[in-house]
Image (cartoon, rainbow, N blue to C red):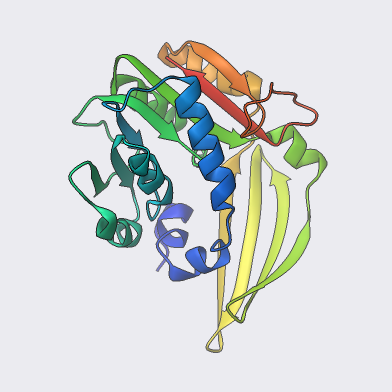
Amino acid sequence: MKTKDWFTDWFNTKYYHILYKNRNTSEAQLFIQNITELLNLKKSTHILDLPCGKGRHAVFLNSLGYRVTGGDLSENSILAAKKFENDTLDFKVHDMRKPFNNKYDAIFNLFTSFGYFEDDREDILILQNIKNGLTKDGYFVFDFLNAKLVKENLVKQETKIVENITFHITREITNGFILKHISFLVDGKTHSYTERVKYLDLEKMTSYFDKVGFTITHVFGDYNLNKFDAENSNRLILVAK
């Protein structure tokens, strides 16, 4: 039986991790190094990586000397991440829609992990929780896709074979959402999932940030921290306080 939220099902399956197993780790690490240097984060900084998946970014942040907590809704992902725990790295199951018990010096929301919800109020609630979960001078780092570029370069159909599984992928933009339909056959059974992310451009995100009292300090368009250009940038990266 499917649960209400698509991400609760899909992110908790092993197939999600198989499909995305070849994500570019070096690119992710370059971004994290660049952003922590730019913000001049002291080694005493306590960073929350939310959502953290299986912990690859949290582990790298921790290797740079930071105290890191990773939070994610997927119990399977947190179980996998917990094997990396140490005195300055811990992981816990957490729904972004719930307030935090602690305050953090920086909160990172990386690699398009936002905009899952039908109702804008839920997305704004998440930002409010993040704002409330930061220390007085804490930073929020938000890394999202560039919606305009995605729209203009939408790959409508694609097939990927990973670990002998053939993933059939179709994409569309409908009712303000970027949809990615994924289907595949395993052991004679067809599995189907749909990833759904809200079409959020700089203007819309700025309005969200304004609503919760965030002040945007930087806007970047890629992991090298080049200036954002709506026509050409791969990412929409916002830093706020």
